Image (cartoon, rainbow, N blue to C red; front, top):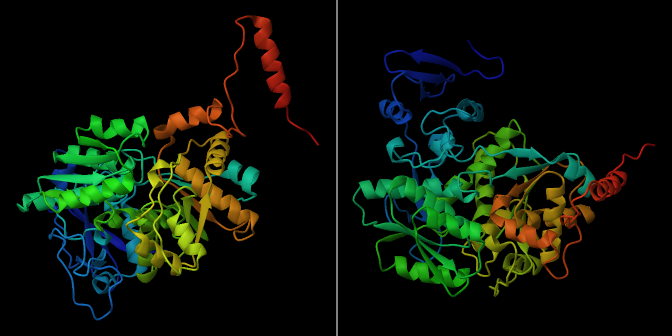
Amino acid sequence: MLSLLNPSFSIFNPNTKTKTIHHPNKRSISTIVKCNHDNIKDEARRHRDNHNFSAKYIPFNAAPDSTESYSLDEIVYRSRSGGLLDVQHDMEALKKFDGAYWKALFDSRVGKTTWPYGSGVWSKKEWVLPGIDSDDIVSAFEGNSNLFWAERYGKQFVGMNDLWVKHCGISHSGSFKDLGMTVLVSQVNRLRKLNRPVYGVGCASTGDTSAALSAYCASAGIPSIVFLPANKISTAQLVQPIANGSLVLSIDTDFDGCMKLIREVTSELPIYLANSLNSLRIEGQKTAAIEILQQFDWEVPDWVIIPGGNLGNIYAFYKGFKMCKDLGLVDRIPRLVCAQAANANPLYLYYKSGWQEFKAVKAENTFASAIQIGDPVSIDRAVLALQNSDGIVEEATEEELMDAMAQADSTGMFICPHTGVALTALIKLRNSGVIGPSERTVVVSTAHGLKFTQSKTDYHSGNIPGMGKFANPPVSVKADFESVMDELKGFLLSKAPKYK
């Protein structure tokens, strides 16, 4: 039966066990209907994608007359000129289907276990890696993360009634890096089956990248190698690649030093480079932007605020929003804000100079350790995203980001310090009047707070000099009834409702 809201309809074919979504005057795409005795990959094998969608590498921000391109099955990270690469999709093929068709297709896959579409990333497979076989995909059904209405925080701390937090850290390895890593490791899985010279996958990391890489490689049985800056990441982040069987090299340098080494090593050994220099990860991370639109029933928020370190994610969000606009799912893109720690703020300084001259900085220690990067690989990508979205860059001091994290936690969240950086940017933009009280705003939370329990403990215990404005330390009480009652009475009196 035709829907009044969507002219698409579906027909079940009992012979092929597929359901086909039809759209007037458009080609159709089939989805799989479960059979009783098959596992989800068996079902997928019976149904092969029948489309003409394709993607390839091209130089990032290439001139319209550039003819340089590479197959996704090539092992290549840079253009001939040494610049970044980008994944370019055949937009003309995708445009043969209108926005209503894509919305209906993506919505039909949410919350399902059909392989691989139960993933928030692979539910957009046609826009991610259209040519990969479903058998080659390595997925933990990542994505589909909570878009949380921060009602109390919005009203109490920033005077807003339409503030949302996209909890990308509620994911398989506890960070948004899963979204990109499922794509990269899936392509590596394909390359190995094609007998390409890939013996393992390596990355430099401030913690979250290594956790995601090690998990997905372990799932696929692919060796992984991790370069970590010694004594600069949390124990929770360190233990993840160790537990997943990676070779972990703790190196006496910072992230930028680790990045330099891994690039040199992967040019000499058959190790596939997994850092965000690799544009495949952008394809997975962009699906978080599409997911936000989907969760708002395809309405566009006014602002999206994203923590920034190596700066691939700000471009990924821009790319996801722009793709939705270009293919007719929405009619505009939101304004983007990139939030940096003041101790690692090269993009902020570049922005404040009016984009006159970029200078790498020596990143100082920050509680937002995953964005402690002074020479970001994706600086050009970030600038393009911000300039084309009327974007803004803000920064947060250590005290500001830790206070913002404590305030958010006090309203029921449990966020990472990087989200504290983004919330600080929001506070500053609200105080300056740039973001209005009724504008729909999404703050992207990039990692789970459980990865950063030590910094939270130190904050609330008063172990960080000069910090703790919103600390809530445990209270020591004698083990007798009167002492406990005195403490509770004082607490309840301080929290008593104030009636008008």
